[in-house]
Image 1 (cartoon, one colour):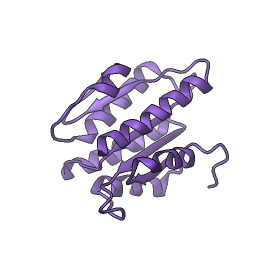
Image 2 (tube, rainbow, N blue to C red):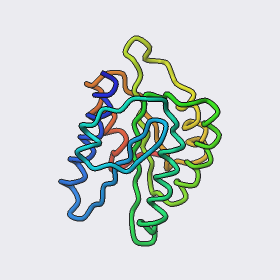
Image 3 (cartoon, rainbow, N blue to C red):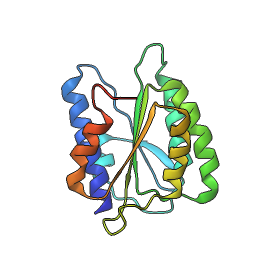
Length: 164
């Protein structure tokens, strides 16, 4: 169920981008203990399992931006969905990488999916993002517990006139 909530969010985002913008480059990064750039099809249909090392995805995202998307030429937006699982000793590196990515990106949206029986729960990864958010308004984080909340969270994250 958690997996489907995340995929629903990204499906909605992907459809929005393709319909709203004539020229858009969407890059899909998937990860467990290591990250890789994948096709749209593999992103939405591949089933992967394993431990989670979020810094691998952040490192790859940073590399892709630096190699292909000069901020002088591109408006860079990053969206990440997660269940919040991460190896605790990876969190300091995640903070460092997030701050670097935010130097290039206009906006970073983070969606954390939590089980319905624990709606107030926030993972250690959420706390990492919360720490970075306190210093940078480019990063916005929202929690989702149910698939019916995906549209609301999507609308809140990408509202045209966000209040600071």
